[in-house]
Amino acid sequence: MILAGLLLAGSLLTINGQASTVQAKSYGKAVTKIAGNGNYAIYHNVSSKGPSGKFTSTKYFKHGQIQSKESRSTKKGGKIIVDGRNVGWVSEKFFARNQISVANEVSLVKNSSYSFPTRDAINYATDAHGTAINPNKVHVSRKYVSTNPGKVTYSYGKAKAEVDIDVHDGDMTSPSVTPKKDFKTTSTWNGGSKGSSRNWNSAHGYRSETTSNTFKSNGLTLRTRLFQPRFLSLGYGQAGDAMGQAGDAMGQVGVIPEGMTVNNGIFTTSLFTSNNSQYGNLVSYNLNALKSKYAAQNLTTMKWSTFKSYAKNIKVSPYIKLGHGQSLGSSSNYI
Image 1 (cartoon, rainbow, N blue to C red):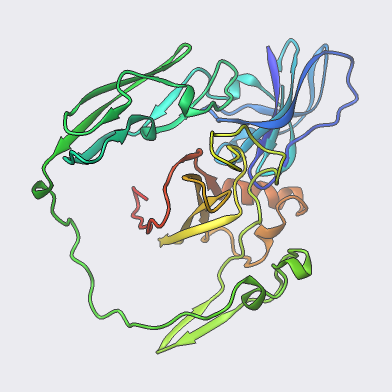
Image 2: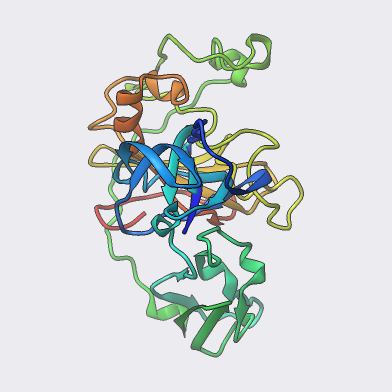
């Protein structure tokens, strides 16, 4: 069995055990892992006899950004990093191996001037070790869909998936929700991060914020509810394989937010690695459980017990096609 090092977004999971020599594989940069549905033990150490020093479970970390920089072949398993923080060794069975996840359905408005790239429907694809692979490596039965609907099949190694893509005339669509009226019009503040953030700027080394903000205009009051972590993964130059776009790292989560939505205390935003990237991650914070405005900035240094609670209440999506300038909305079932 292979034990893989697990890295979750915002915290790095690495175990420095006193181990006997075992066959090891390390990566120049961390690879991204996709969690499966099962719960597995996490260990401090691993040797030729297998893992030892069980201290926690993957149930706290399966929704985070999971990365790994090392795996070892033993009788029982491998090593993980979660949300940028070193955690420990876990069985490779924890990962979703040989799987392709695609959208449940795709519905397009007929447009002879536009062709939908079918790989944009991929949530993630993994190899035999549960490592996320570039969607461009996935074979598709149709690369584009424009005016003709139909089934598209996806395959990579032993992994397979399919999705029915519907194409319809635009006049078939109608709003499902009546827009609310009487929202007030107001203007936002001026200035960049140096003016609006006391510590989060280059002049102060991007230190954590310790004082919240209040903004008032035309009867509207906005107050800081949460300061996000700078990264929910390993940082610059440490995470991920290139996705085929300049400066685009598949495993890095952050640092550019675009759009936000809140529903029943669940705050969701999209995070990109660069202004030019079309791919990014959706990150959801359960504000009902994360009471502090400031603590999430310090995932890699907070107490272990606090980190487990935070990791359980921060969810990071796979690296998906998001585009730019998209507004976000959410319900209890959808984002």
